[in-house]
Amino acid sequence: MDLILKVWRQKNNADSGRFEKYKVKANEHMSFLEMMDVLNEDLLAKKEEPIAFEHDCREGICGSCNMVIDGRPHGPNNGTTTCQLHMRFFKDGDTITVEPWRVKAFPVIKDLVVDRSAFDRIIQSGGYISVNTGQAQDANAIPIEKDLAGQAFDAATCIGCGACAAACPNASAMLFTSAKINHLGLLPQGEVEHSKRVQAMVTQMDEEGFGMCSNTGACEVDCPKEISISNIALMNRSYFGSVFGSDKGSK
Amino acid sequence: MRWLINFLGSSLGQKTIMSLTGLFLISFLTVHLLGNLSLLLNDEGYTFNTYAYFMTHNPLIKTISYGLYFFIVLHTIQGLYITFKNRMARGANRYAVKAKDNASFSSRNMALLGTLVLAFLFIHMGDFWLRMKLDWLPTVVYEGYAEPMSNLYERVAMQFKNPLIVIAYVIGQIVLGFHLWHGFQSAFQSLGLNHPKYTPFIKGLGKVYSVLVPAGFALIPIVHFLLK
Ligand code: HEM
Image (cartoon, rainbow over all chains, first blue to last red; front, top):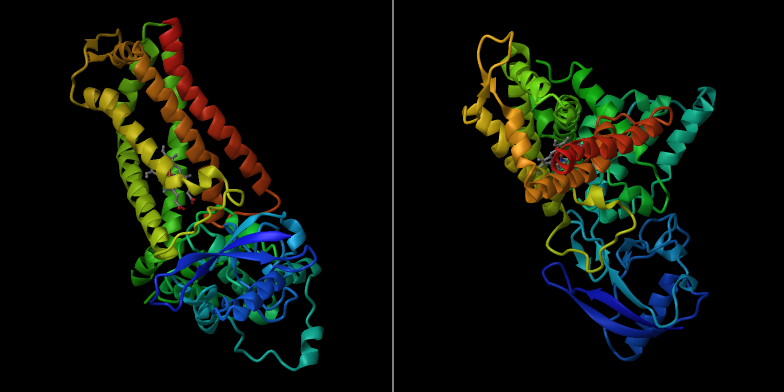
C-alpha cells in the first residue's frame, strides 16, 4: 500500500517545528512502528535525518510509542498502543498525519519524542508505599475482596504513556494521576498513606501545569488500557476526604 | 484557613466551585421555569404578576436571589478562568488534526456555550428584570394587595409579539440545552459522585432535564407569539 505521511519534524525544543510530507510503501501486516521503520530506512538511504520516535517493548506495555495519529493518541483504534496498531486499518492512498503529544508539561525533545518526566515527578511526590508492608508472603496473608482487587488492578494497568493528557482538550493529567493514586489506595497496604498521597500527588499534578478535567471523557476513549474516568471521581472523593476529613493543616 | 485557600486554589477545588455553582443554577432554572409557566395561563397575567411580586418582596427569596446573582458571576468568572488555564496547558502548538469522535460537542465547547448563555442572560435581564428593578414598567392594582405592582406580564406579552425576540429566546434555550447536556452529569462527576448504581440514572436525568427544561422555557415565547 502507498501512503503519504505528514510528520511533525522538530530539531529540538527551541526549534519551532513544521510538518514534512513523505511517501512510504507499506503492507497491511506491518505495525505502525514497522511502517515508520521502513520510512526511516528510506530516509537513511537518502542520507536524510530519520524521524525520532520512542519505542521499546513493541507489545503494548512500556508506554513509550507515543504519537498522535490523525488527531488521536495511539491512532484511531481503542484499547491499543501505536505498536499494536496495524496498517490493515488504513487504506491504500491514505494521508496520515503524525504529531507528538501536544501538552505543555511534556516539552518536545525531538520530532515525535516528548519529555514525560512531569509524570515521574507526580509519582515521586507520593505514588509509592513507604510503610513496612512485611515480607512477600504477608501480601497473601491479607484477605482482599475480589472486586476491590479487580478495581485496583484495572487502575494498575496504566502504563504512564500520557495518552490521557494528549487526548484531553485541556491537557489534563487527571486520568493518569487518579489511576496511580487508586491502584495503591484501594489496597490495604496503600490505604495507610492514602490521604497524604492524594494531597501530594494532586498538588504536584497542578504544579506541573496540566489542565483541569472537564469530564469530556476523551482520555478514557484514547487510553490504550481503557482506564475508566470513574477513577477520577474516586480521586476527587479521596481528595475532598483528605481536605475536609483530616486534621492536616487545621492549625 | 490556609487549608481552605489551598483547596480552593487547587484544580479540584476550582472544579468544585464550578460544579456547585452549576448545580445551584440548575435548581434555580427548575423553580424559574415552574413560575414562568404561569405566563401560559389565560388570566391576563394575574398569577404571573402576583408570583413575580412575591418573588421580589419575600425576604427569604430576596436573600436567595442575591446568592443567585453572585453564583452566576462566580460560575462565569471561574468558567472562563478554567478555560483560559486549560488552553495554556496545551502549549504553543495545537493539533493539526482535530479529534471529533472521542468527546461530545457539548463537552468540548462549554466555554463557548456558556458565553452564549451569558449573552442571552444580558438580553433577557435587560428586557425584564432591569426594567422591573428600575420601576420602568406600568403597574396594576390587584385586590388584596396593599400597593400597585409592576405589570411584568404585559411587558412579556409585548416583547413576545416581536418575532426576532422570539427567535433569540429559542436559540438561547437551545444553547442552554447543549450546555446542560454535558454540564448536568459533569457536575456530579466533578464532585466525585460516580458509581455504577446511580451514575446511569444521573446521566439519564441530565438528558431529560437538558431537553425538557429549555423546551419548557422556549414554549413560552412561542405560545405567546402564535396564540396570544
Ligand atoms: C443558567 C445558566 C448555567 C447553568 C445552569 C450552568 C451549569 C453548568 C454545569 C452544571 C456545569 C458543569 C460543572 C462541572 O463540570 O463540574 C457547567 C460548566 C461550565 N459552565 Fe456553566 N452554567 C450556566 C451558565 C454559564 C455561563 C453564563 C458561563 C459563562 C462563560 C458558563 C461557563 C461554563 C464553563 C466554561 C463550564 C465548564 C468548566 C470546565 O471546563 O470544567 N456557564 N455549567
